[in-house]
Length: 206
Image (cartoon, rainbow, N blue to C red; front, side, top):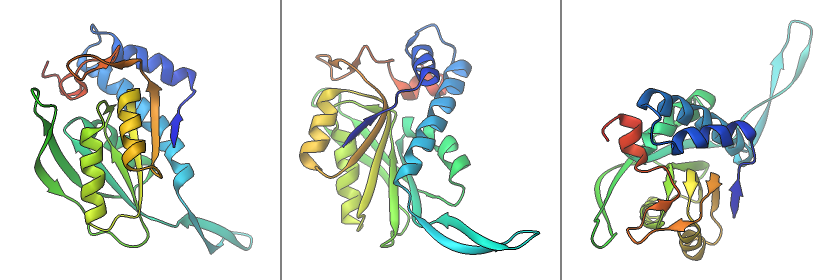
């Protein structure tokens, strides 16, 4: 199921990300703000457990997060969303998966994988700013399923219809959260209008 944020502040920041003249520092700041908006929206997938807490006046009912939260950024661009999510979900454990794309075949090649031990209560947020062909995300979801993941949410900044369709075909029950749904992929498999290479622009290695 696809959810697209409808937020004026996010739309403004998406525009900053798209602008090729945006400097790396302003790009990172805009990505942080969008990441915060995505983290807030992602909270709707979190369950709660009740507890009792003593206020200065009386005992009352309170709440805590009912899931073992895992953040799994897809390297290296996914790192751009980690801080915003960990700020709002400080109890989260963080793993990493590294996938590179063969520019000729568009196939994914895994070069690093460190996923925390999953529990029956684990909820995994897969963080990748660009959901393009869907290849990287599907490879990541397959690896998570191998590790026993039952609940996963994909979080992206920009998504292409082709990638969304591929994910929903392979994983029909998956939740996808994105800031904006762009027009399509070009002949090279890049999102258009897009914002270029999110990892390069975030890290200033363009």
